[in-house]
Figure 1: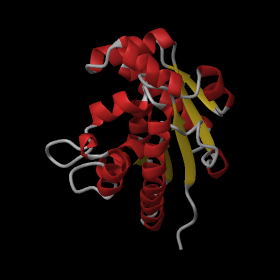
Figure 2: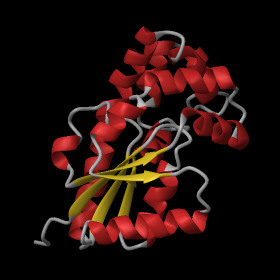
Figure 3: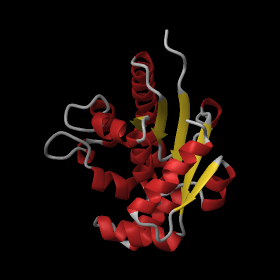
Length: 203
């Protein structure tokens, strides 16, 4: 049996650059396990979560192709905390199953280290005990808004609702073993900082 690889969690709020850093860690030799990608697969047309979502929220939650209507659901859950809890009750157990499936597969293939890109890493208490290190990608709320507005159609109010539902900056930093301050960094500089973090962690 292959020895257990190191587990690195990458945390950061929306627009922080968290997934970019996770991708750099993957390019530097890690195997990235992306919780958002798992969620998208589960909620795509024919996805495992679709029947339960339709049962919980009705046909209005499903788009014309048979997948989750992500824009409509985003609006719904960030204006109705109870709806958010219902959606999480459907999705989180399925996401955990997929993450563990990918984790076991990566370990059996001899992965050097695993990188967990998880939006709710700080918010979900089950994560921290299983990780060897947490890298927090940090930036100001102003920068978060600017990046989100530049990359998609969400307006400032929608972005703020997502930020309000996530752990705050202080909570993320309190969980960090290593921090990357992603303010005004080029992609080259961000990659260099990520590589330095990896050297600090001796991986």
